Length: 450
Ligand SMILES: Cc1ncc(COP(=O)(O)O)c(C=O)c1O
Image (cartoon, rainbow, N blue to C red; front, side, top):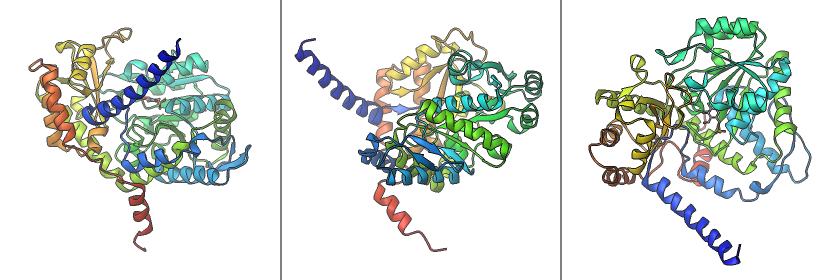
């Protein structure tokens, strides 16, 4: 390549990244259910950790999730940062052990599944079927099967209830005697029947893993299910979906008896040295700050997010769209799923909506041909981003009316796009959080003395 071409690439890169920030950050309405929205304070924190972002902190942690040993020098503040972040996460979610070194939800699942299959010496895992919204990391065709060599067996799924069939799954767990039983998924409107299956899973010697990648923020706000209260052993999650922190992952558990100690030690080994070298330390202060925001505003944020998702479900349904889960109120989480076969299918509509700057994703529905990933019947729509921008049910109805105009082909997308940009720009703030690090510090320094 001639040098001139190389420089052209660099300029192209800078220009594209500036254009992206404007486009998705200021001109689109983001309804991707797996993407979070950070507060200005969390953004500021991320942009301040220049040095930390360059560092390594390889080593072992103890059974409180604190730093035990580090193999490089220069760690005195890094150790504090990791320990504070771990403690904030444990306090927020209500448990006594965590690992915050995971760089993604996928990494959290990798380390947890690896650790637990070696603790149990059992490579069988009962999982939600992919067709019912499981994440690929749980499936034989993804991380679980192809990377870890686990043998996966599907939970029984009730399409009418959009949920795991507890009675049939109990029989499957008894018959399979797995080392791990998972709950949670990427399409996740209703709490899974954890309580109903904990006993049978534990009797067979399995550990229970709840994948809260999508719903950690709702759980932290106390507005979805309480996985630890229901009896799960481990929670794995992303820290950037309904939990509005920096991109990363986390594992949480209660280290309360020998059974859990044994498992946690194996999971820690699977984190380091098996799968981590640098752990993207620059994100930790931002993660801890997001935990503080959820402690203060998480309940209101989760409540409003769920209310907004339910409002959208009702509004789209009343206007002729098949919204799944109607008999149970469409959703109890941040997301809804709609069947748009009658209007051209998921692929076409996701693309038409994109042309109107409404960003969401096409999705396979449980009854679709599961090989037809390119053109599924559904769309998945998440409301955590717009909620944090301040959308209330009447704003959701305005948004739905624009979505309906595109779905029904009443106006062309480029025309609707003008209204979407206006709507987006009428919500310039990010709520349920701090506007700056100084605002967070002032709040913490001036806490009422109780
Ligand atoms: C249920 C579930 N688990 C795990 C993941 C993987 O998380 P990450 O994208 O942080 O690797 C996702 C991603 O969307 C998910 O939906």
